[in-house]
Length: 355
Image (cartoon, rainbow, N blue to C red; front, side):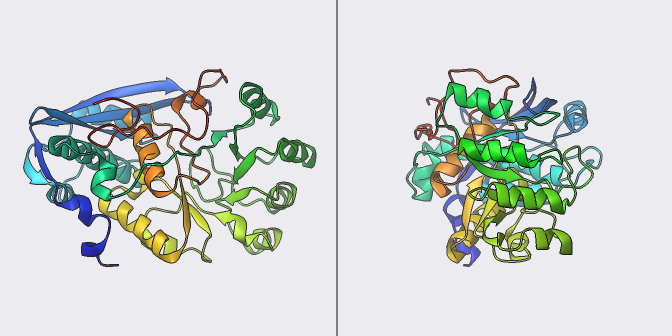
């Protein structure tokens, strides 16, 4: 599909006027045991404001951004013109620790620009894209502690027995724990974290763990295995359940996978630009590949924006887009159940709020 015929063409020519830029730092303790820091970007113009969220994981990246500020982004243009302008700018005062952080910041700015352009036009995203928002099915993403136990899952199920889960596997997942997880009937996917490098969540390649997960949780998706001759043997016969997350930043990354997937995890912030993201959605749809959304422990408007996109492109997948209350360290009642009712704002690229 040509760029001119794709989904991006529906938003590329939206007029955009930016008169002011503001950045705000947010921080919160989350269920994975660390302080999450993000930066909310506000672009303002013509009496409206647009919001986006920088989800770089290193707090120092946000500290440096707030010390140095962003380049001058003001002026009148279009969504496509704004993207072209960002192509020529370095958004980091010093090179980021991880190259993917460039995509995270780019996403913050382009999603804020889209929100602002839509509000200036008086239109909601779904109307411009010609899609109908649908209820969003989501999973609760969590870890099982050290040592791993089923207690976190059981505490959530005691609050809401209908919840579904995406769980991060660790080497201490033994056969008994996996049997108890399978008995809940609530595990939709298991993240092996095999495709991360030089991060605190790296898990490497563990053939024994892979085999225990594949055989013990036969209905669950298997996300991000690191494929070696040994792990391929451990996962033999389960290839149709393998899905990918960390490697997926573009259409080229989907095409480069070791075999065609049935579905992949689409994190909008990993794609960086609106054009790359929309091309990704178009590519998956054209090839009959499923998708589900992924969260980044967003603390601001970014969580609603990925829920909005999930409602338009993959509402029925095991979306890791649960409302923020599910990311808090201790399970508590009062969170919205799955599926989330459609909640697009009357104008703009926001979810779950009024005008």
